[in-house]
Image 1 (cartoon, one colour):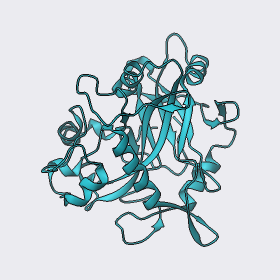
Image 2 (tube, rainbow, N blue to C red; image 1 turned 135 degrees about the vertical axis):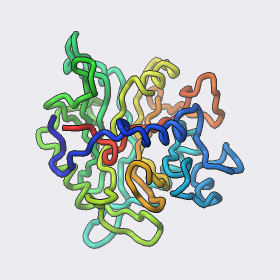
Image 3 (cartoon, helix red, strand yellow; image 1 turned 60 degrees about the vertical axis):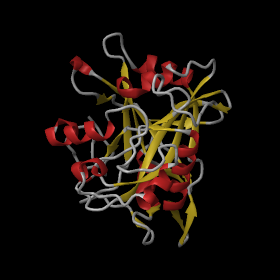
Length: 296
């Protein structure tokens, strides 16, 4: 399976028993998975991070991630991205533009019908981080599940969103956007200043992928709006990931959330309902690449 030429050939970490145990501890329940001793579970994650000194040796902190975001929490995580990720332009660090993308779900369904077959339907979405100048320009690819084995990227399925037609359109040279992201993004990982992305050791994520069966199907089912829009947002949180990426200290990472809009309107609530955990919520827990890349 072809990947971005700059990505190393990572193994799929959920196959490792220790990582599985830690991920189940951190991510297995509904609602926001708050760090130990967090005083207010309704508070945005940025405030929680400031109030709670994360321990990257601790089982809960080392793999902590939000699963669901309220409206306030999403706002805070989007602000964290704006503060910690910039584009290097002419020797200056500028804000990344177009960090929220709204895609009609019907256009995704139409594309998936063309890509899939009755035997091999589309089962997941892969989002590679890209830049077009100073604008976020992600590359969308799709995954199927041949022979009921691991999800794999469908060959020649690289697309980007065209706001004019409100559709995903085929990209003839997707690598140029992904290479621009790797070259030009600057990240302030630990609040000590901006630097280029890393591709070795504790590498920075360059993509994320969402198996539909994990959460995306539930997100769509619990938000049955007439004009469903898949809203893709750039966010950041300070994470350890020691158990799966061996990072010794928490760092700000580029993450992606998905939520459902109704036409031009977002549907996000500040009240979490455990009986309908995806209703009017944004969700994360895509698999970051690295560390949890698919095999080639």
